[in-house]
Structures are given as structure tokens and as C-alpha cells.
Length: 360
Image (cartoon, rainbow, N blue to C red; front, side, top):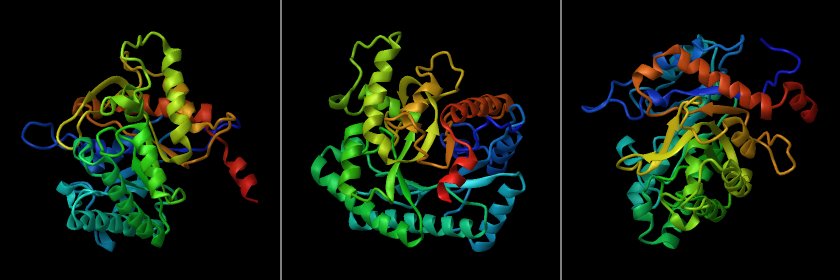
């Protein structure tokens, strides 16, 4: 139900890749099919309001990075038939999905850039089909903090060089890139190293960051970079103002670079294996162990230093990875998530007419 006082932007998206991440394989739960993720998203409703769209991962078994034009048309029809649109796309830049390390060998870096090129081409096709009108293409360094630490300065320069080439590709398709702010990626595993990398790339119009609240909160704890910890080691979680002071310090540095934003909750623990070493634990919004007031913490990213909405992204996303299938297949899960995202938009969003007035 839309009222005069209801904000229309940013649009509200769900991620489909939680149906893939951590699923499949002999010791994991089955993958949740793409169509099922679409159905769950489309069915969610809170006081007459629904999700506006989905963000997708360009990798099988959901979406083939080598999809044909006919397959992309079928994808667009699948999404449109449920009253949704497509926003941001995740480029499969990692070795197991056909990519390679952004600081690796010439062959690995070429594979990385090939996946960026294919992803941008798909983005352009989806734009032409009318199913996608906003969003970014997501990348990361596709290397571990341990490997990066063997030569911090040299490896940051290599990653930056690869990212600059990726920017050239993206600009050729009229796209923008966002580097995922997650502590498991080398050269991006602290708020300070991430900022230094962005400055080294030096293409702020084309390359920014994707800020996921569950991941970026871990920057304040220094899990993979103790030297950049912002909260004291003996921090008492009952003292919330200290937490928000640390979050404010971090966001003041990274907020100008935001091009994509994920609403999320975190219980201050980490998990992961392989390339996803010590990564953020997503919690459901109502989890009693969650450490943040989600709406308040989101405002540190979505409002600038004057308190005005940044309007840095036309949509926000819920990226709820690694939940059990029983939880993900429960419709109430998505109603609760949608309610949280609506609350974030009401607190920090804007009305469509404000955009229209600004662009006249």
C-alpha cells in the first residue's frame, strides 16, 4: 500500500545466490533452484508492499555466464512474470567459476577480466530487454588475505591494475563496478586496506564498493587485520554507543565509495573455509544475537555527514547467505526480511518526485 508519506526509493531487492552459496556437494544441503528463489521473493508481502526485484549471480546452476541471447530473454521473462526486475549482477571472477586472482599470473588476471567482460555484456543485454534499469556488476580481488600479505604493496598495485582494466571494460558497456567489502578478500580485508586499494585504482566514477552490513561490521573487529581494529579487544557489547562510534569512523571513510548496499545483521562471529576465510555471519533481522540496530546502522551508510540521504544507489538488497534450507523455504522468513528493508527505506530513503524534481 503506497501512501503520501511512503518513500519509493531505494527499491527493495532480494538476492538469489543464497540458494547457491554453501549449498550442494556431499556434505551440504541441496541447492535451492533459481525459480524457487524468485517465487519466495515475489510472494513476500508486508502491508501491501513487496520486493521490487532481485540481484543475481552469473554462475550455474542458476544463470550461465555464457548464456545465449535466447536464454537471457527467457531469464528476463521469468523475472518479469513475477512482477520483479533485475538489479546488480555478481561476476564469477573466482578460479572455480572460470575466473582467477586479480593479483595472479597473466593467465589468471586474463581469466578474471574475461568474466568481467562477459558479465558486463549480460548486463547490457538485460538493459536492452528492459528488465534491468539500475545496479552494478560486483567483483572482488579473488585472492586470500594470506596470499596478499606476502607482498602487500606489490599485490595491491597488481589488484589495482587489474581493477583499472576491469573499469575500462565496464565503461565500454556503460556499466559500473562495485568491489565487495568483505574481510575474506586479500587487499580488501580491512576498511583501511580497502580504501587504499580504491585510491590506488583511482576510478571513483566507475569503481566503488558494495557495502554489506554483516561483512563491514567485522572491519571494526579486525578479524583479518588486527592492526585496523576499531573496537577494543575487551569491548563490552552492551555499550552500544562505542559500536556506533566505530561504525561511524569506518563509514566516514568508505561511504563516499558506495555504489551498492546490502542490508544485513551480524552476531559478531565469523565462519568460512577455502577462499571465504573468516567471512561475515549473516543473521536474520530478528536474531537476538544480532549486534546492530539494523535501521540505525544502515543510516551511517545511507545518509551523508549532513544527515541527508546519499542517494548513492537506486536499490538496496538483502543478502542472506548460509541459512538452512528450512529457514529459507519458510515464507515468514522473507516477510520479516522485507519488513526490515521497508523500515530502512522509510528511515533513510526518498520519494520518487524528489528525484524527478532534481532532474528537471
